[in-house]
Length: 260
Length: 260
DNA sequence: GGCAGCCGTTCAATATACTGAACGGCGTTC
DNA sequence: GAACGCCGTTCAGTATATTGAACGGCTGCC
Image 1 (cartoon, chains in turn green, orange, cyan, brown):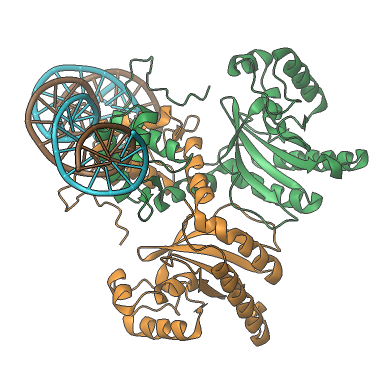
Image 2 (cartoon, rainbow over the protein chains, first blue to last red):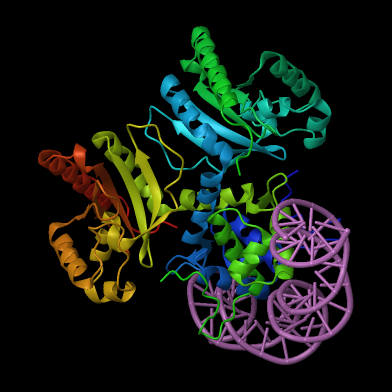
């Protein structure tokens, strides 16, 4: 679903080349610093074309070349844009107080994610006991089928839709990850009946997560609690799930419709 | 320093138009959603030209049009880029454990900022006691002359450099903000002697901040502690400043030079 | 009902950016 | 020390994006 180089459009629509490439560059550099020539090879763009582009981006502060290094990296101006997205997002804003409460109440890591194609993108995080790290995970992606957040969101769609969304065989992140449609479909059926999703070491070994969707409209977002298995007992799990379902109910009571 | 429309370069270098405009669009939309026609007016770009651009950005997931709304807003793909910058930044990585400790030890809000022109950009934050809000402040800018972070960084440069950096009269955010060179210069002289900067309600009423630079290389970054004045006593202030100076010393012991 | 304002969209002519090859600099290798 | 690999940079010709005017849809206002 999320192709890295979707340069060709079918509708007879031709993307603006330089704009398209600008995004290519930014996305490529999001993976780490890179020289002009290396970018040229990786993106299949002539060096001379990149030259102008990179200079443009650099003069605007979106890229920078640190000291004597010839490698380009993202610049300060780029930071603003992402935070602006998160700041202005209605669902993130609506969920914020609930995430706060949930994190404070459980003392566990709480996250909010959104379905984008077959990936889940992390948009907010509370990491209550330990002092909070960087934004780090925010903006990062994981395959939906391998996470509690993702499975909660997939379960909100019918099987046909889900199946069309995914590409098989599914990527296996741990030994527990669903890789075939049959096992995933069975899991999703359980999620629908049960009302919440469980990721039992399917994304990260030793980590179990629970997730519910955020009610309202398209059901694009979900909230999860992640707990190391060693810290988890049966009673503790019941407790956490109850807190999560409470949070979902609370989210359901807040205004559903786009206000502006 | 930070001009919104620096479309003309003097070096005989002409920026790539579409790339330049792509950034214009992204930066404009960072301020909030906007229709095509409105963008056209604000950026002085023909609607027809914007049309292609916006379609390109939308196809790539960098922009989105929510539901029936004709307004464009930032899309999910944009988020990744900013977080990648912060993640890959050496100084942020180096400072992270120190910020953690400082926040845990003082129980106050700790921030890291970088000088960009005459602004300070917030790159990291710890908000220990209260559950952590959005990334919110990260990526946001404030005038350097009005913040403790900014004054610490300005004080690390000589008067001549500072004066060339700023444009007078300086923007006044509160009644306490320095607006003239004389008073700012006097303050910076004190900062240099004292070793740390104080912002006494100069950016926000009722908030006092203390800041020290992060040693190493260009001195681009600083760390601050922010405290509501009502919670501040003389002894508490001494305590906080001591903790801040400790943190600075610790930062000075970590490797200064770019490792790669 | 019709007019005026907004919106996004299309199209052919023109202005412009892209290209590939050649260049100069620098460090390594033989 | 010469030949190579890497790097970023320049330039004239061609491929391509940009432009302004015109279009169709929509809403609200007389």
